[in-house]
Image (cartoon, rainbow, N blue to C red; front, side, top):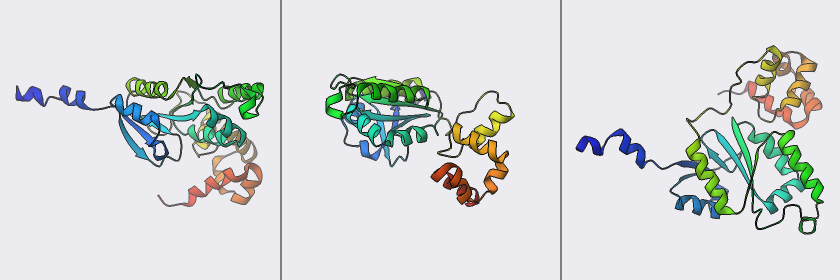
Length: 221
């Protein structure tokens, strides 16, 4: 009887699903809804994404946030950064409360918004989930805690890569270095060793501020 009380099966049942949330989400209605669903929330200063659920990074935008970040191009940077994780998605929240393609409040033509959404899906390859409101968002996040398996590292592995793909894959491991930038550097300098040996100023002339990430190769662990 006493063994049954402290059995592994019973202990596992008592463990709440866990979500890591950015500290800026602390007062959001999504958090209160998640807590009511029995989710354990850990708050951290996340440099990338608003929520982390095991190996999935989630960027959450209300409709107005999405439109503003489209105008100031902040979302583009966030989409590039979120791809450091093996899995990632963008949630656009409040579709039921506000028309996404309404020109008047945002001053953005509806087709420009549609075009940007296509870029997110096809160019940046980030999946999009549209939610009705904060409760709907919280429900999606809650279900995601149930669907994911074991925690994974920051980057997923590809099954089979040829030599060129492997070199590109390694280079894309540097934050901010996407496929286009990796190909550009490899075509010019041929090897990763040659790229790393270049002066950062020269690399900046090729790829801009992204080149500063290569300073890491001289840093101690």
